[in-house]
Length: 609
Image 1: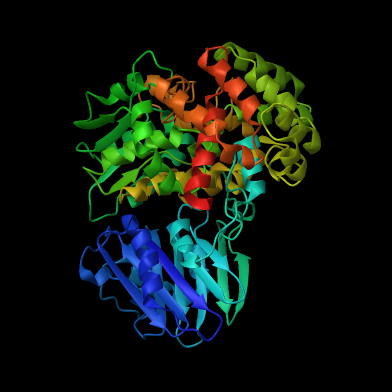
Image 2: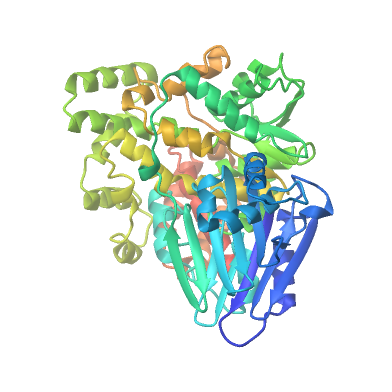
């Protein structure tokens, strides 16, 4: 929806408005429609607005409570604001706008920090109390909307993105090598409060932050494990609630469309919008497609809807467009990404910008319904540890029959290893890493234990919400907001999540197929080809082919041979060059590693050097 920022000086220095304006200008893409500032001595708040609900000037922020005590800057949407507004009216509150921001302020006035338990939405907001001069910050349950901060004895600086903070720090920042290690070895980011910058942290999902005087305290206000509810009784009951979640996310005063990959999850969103519940036949969809002989192409699934949908839009990302967009793409994300799938989404958002302001997509379904093939490894481990050996043999048979691959068997064996051995296996498989770099950081990662150590399928799903989902949400936020779009994710309606993750494992994976319960709930609604597809692509790209082009060969070799690349002492250039040459010759596919080398080095040059 927007971008928020703020500065609190713990010394006697008043906040300079020019610093706030600099931060706001750095993230103006998040809010091109309006902006505002508030300064009260040593505290300053800034806001840039993307108008979604109540497009009038009444939605201007910073917004004040009716009594003038509280000031809020708010990024996100409270989808159930209409219902909350009616409840608050019965308590004597009056409203002067049609915004969810005004409802948020009234809810905070009435219920304090506990108001967040009543919200169905996505948010990162900061509320300043003019009476006590304290600041309260809240972030949504699963981390859909971002919040970054820098804190020392003299300053607290926050923003919706990292670059605005860097703009006003006026000092050189350092890379966080543990985060870089986890990125290179495990392809993971955002599993802790750390970022790629030593000095900058993120407020984690489901957490709040309070500043009283110069004291900063952080509290976990929402824990998914302790909020699980009774599982759905039937697929029909799930589908009814999913339709409700989609309906809430249609609340908007601007056009809404769908990012459509052709997978089960985005097909479920599209089919629900087309169903009798919503009858949205004028729906706009946006898809990335490639040549039909390329592995990333999903056009055959997308075209299942061509006879129903009138407004289907397509874009074809390529190696050439990636080279053209490289600088903007790296600037948009401000932290390295372990693959080019987010680039396909970046281009889909660029396509959508000309037609809508809000998009819906299927993010979050994989983490609830075990959509990644790694989850078979967790499922097999679950069955083994619980001595369900006959079921284990049956599921392994169905897996091999359906997918004709041993990958999940290898993953199953990997997950049985002790944490220390798991890390050793991963690092030994990456021959290009500097030995001293590995020695320095291999013992401190929390992925091998916290994520890969899950003992049951349900535990693995919960751990993916805790340690893995957020990096996908971050990439979606950056991709959409770079083009001044708001992205909404109906699968992450907390009412769905809290009941889906209580389902028994045999309702999630069954007969060699993931997402069993979701597939059952979408019978009749989703075309059979899409409903029963067994592959997993999701905005993938033909990156292996891209990185064999002359242009990428030149770029990659120049980076690997540069003295500055060698001086970082993270990657062995000679080993990386040998691997790259084998990739060019078609002997191996290490496109993921090549991208990480490129992205990491260009990130260094943009943000660190």
